[in-house]
Amino acid sequence: MVPLVIAQKVDSFNPPEVQALIARCQAGDIDAFEELVARYQKYVFNIVYQHLGDPGEVEDAAQEIFLRIFKSIRRFRGTSSLETWIYRIALNYVRSFCRRRKLLGRLFVQPPARTGEGHSFDVVSSLAADTLDPAATAEHRRLAEEIVEVVNQLSPLYREVLIMREIQELGYEEIAEILGVSIGTVKSRIKRARDLVRQKVNL
Image 1 (cartoon, helix red, strand yellow):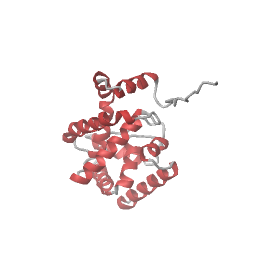
Image 2: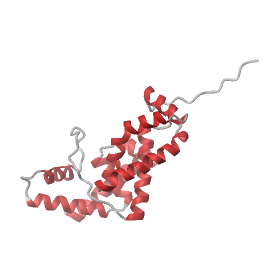
Image 3: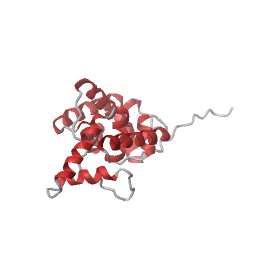
């Protein structure tokens, strides 16, 4: 009789050390979860701050997000990277937070760290950089503030993808995976969001 072999799903999205950490967390190892928090705390803080814009809300929001991660980690099956899975949880929290409190603050905190990708919306990044430069002209500061205000007024459908692409510099594939939509949909939403901002700010 040929022995029955059950195929095991291979997690190809996470490096071995992360897979091991996930397995320990799923087994109920509290020390492992503390390691997970230490490893991804800055990542979650950045997501929360970029979407909420209020430093005073970041720590409480991050604690709630990690609580949700703790409760859900056993359901993680390795069909995406752990970062993407955490981003989904954080984004869902932010959405519900904004619905409840209707709070959304400043989005453009710093100019992008990477410059090689050549985003077509670089005017926003450059204006955001000007707001950090004391020598920037008053006109540039005014225009940057106007752009931020317009972005804040976009519907979540467009605001979220614009933050992910222009501020957090996520790739189209990663955004599509987080939102559960096609890459074509992501590109379409980003284009529409950029067009809406340009129309309202007359860029």
